[in-house]
Image (cartoon, rainbow, N blue to C red; front, top):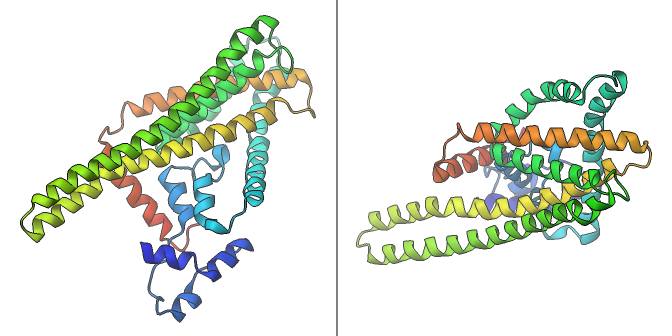
Length: 317
């Protein structure tokens, strides 16, 4: 794997990525006698690992995937530009989705909001159920749903830029912001906790290796060490990804709900649609999670295996 990563970051690969072209590495790999070495696509790895290839329309390309592709060649300005484009694309898609609900409300305003919400969500629920079944699907969908609900509530309780009252400004809006900060702190803490767990697992494993008397026993312990560490490594990666998703969707929600090109009434209906969508996503994620395996190590190994297959597939785009 290290060799494949090295080939994927050769000058030819870096230049091709800068031009936005796909690089197969055959010519350059051949020069160094690496023609038969499979080339690892880091963007594909992270996208499949966290299911974001299926959820591209909701979260875009994860920053982990972008950084893995560009490596140290990506400047801060370029990173900001890519992130801005990501947020704009997501905002356009989300606004179009929410406007389906808004148009339903405008078409038959005499009907109850609950009827429009049910019709809107019934059309999207099959997609949500499919997304929940992907790698990390339940946690990704729950995270997206939570972000949507928070942004909707923040708008609906904002008396200045949204539709809230002055009481909301002092109580409900503050509560939402505190929840967002708490979530960010929790993600950071989880990443640190996962790092500590990795070190503790390795330390315990090394103590067992030191007591081993045969090569076979040492090899078996090393294999077990890798399997034991893997869930903690993925947990740390997920915590980083979670921060990325929260920040991105916060900006996306702001763009959609503070869109000056549409009326305030439409923005208010978008916020209601976003709240309904977020709640449905969380419910689907929760229901799916109850039927999936709770074996963390087994799930982690399977997730990494699937991600590696995609990363080594030359046809993956």
